[in-house]
Image 1: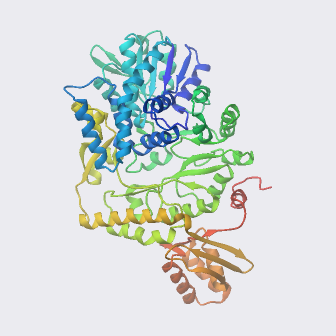
Image 2 (image 1 turned 135 degrees about the vertical axis):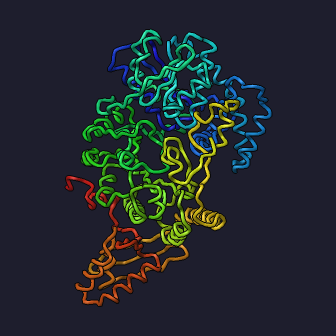
Image 3 (image 1 turned 135 degrees about the horizontal axis):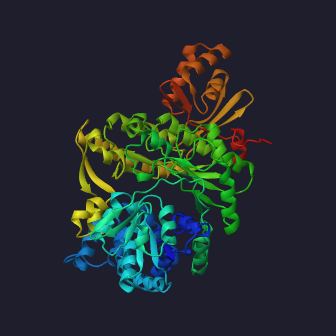
Length: 635
């Protein structure tokens, strides 16, 4: 069958869809009919600007806000809900009023709500025109990738195609169709011919080779309709070693036709994938994480493929910024050393664990990693244990210090309200934050959610959780489908059944934490806390707002102790060595360390201590990365 793979809104404008680009690449290696792609989120971007008559540069921000920041309110899905057939006696005016009130109550600005309402009015015209064009391709089958806010846009376009050409097949796949969610899509939306659960290579290869839907009954991961019921073929966990390099040619062809491509092209990063699943999740899944669904088993390509893949992507498109979609960086054989030795100006992004040390982070920076998403989540070791993060507050602070030192942008979130959280866990973070205003603040502060596939969802009673049903946004995303809404939903309302502290006390502390992080963000750009080494001295520059102590020159035991705790050290050992080396009584050294702890020069946790200042070696970041062991040749 001739297959067209479709990437619907609200995929990031700056990222070609790796989901369809990797599957399109199969068409060059496997037998079967051609596989082509359509980046219709770029079509929607152009249509929306012309329909609303708005400034393109302003609408870029609106698009990003809807696609990234307002996903939790269902905005992107709701906009396209008006293009689907009404359910029951739904009144559009009432629907718009109720949803506008829902957004206002959650702090969305009046101007943005007005824009959202206008976009919903425009969406049916867009889906109709797009469906006309897609049907004209004479494709036998249309496959839609869906994650985050792409489900309802995909359904709206698929329905418009089926209205015009009932004989054409429409399939949906991606995160929104994994396990029970995919079967719920089939039950709730009868115009969908099938869904693909799990990883899509085997299913897409089968669809391309088939002559009819009847030949797909045994294809891996496909759910089909059969005599009024659903026929489910279980997904297969794929090997990733032989997966082809994604083909992004069609994205760039479409981008070049966009009248305002100059707003997007300078910021494009090319997605790639070296691994699937999560090696930490295999060992101990984080309590709140539902990311991998049925794809938790960890599989990784050999590290030698990294340089080859990035070289092929960047040479073919002339783009030097890249973006790993891996859930987590491989522990070993990840290819970073070879990428560092290539000495090219390619930059990339990885998700990593926050317990990486100086050598590992030096290797990352030397390889061109300029942004990371570490799973920090909290600066309290107690909270991290509750979340099963496999790291401590010490690890997370060391990570932030090293990222600042190496010029790596650390993008992280701060979570609270997890089951078992105590006042002390919040209070220790409130005390700490004024001392680390020079380090990267979290992007958001939010309450822990209960997402499908997470341990919180799968074993709620074990964590003292009672599920209360889907989040309220799903009433607007899937109206009139009460019996299916729970199976369609990914995020759920919940209550904690075991209250370990006074509710008002915890609420007050969480509000204070949010306010203090807000101040952290405001003060961050003006905050400086660094040190430089000299011959037998250390010069500390402490210009942190409200707590800074100015310039200090450390000599003798103070110089030795400070150096021994850079990037972390054992307290007892450091004190003993410094005392013996300088002839200073251990009590005096301990007193000095205690003073440094009280003024936030050093963070002490258990038997370890960490200097919170950042090394200003006056070397460029790559030179510093090489010094930390990040370049294997060290020429």
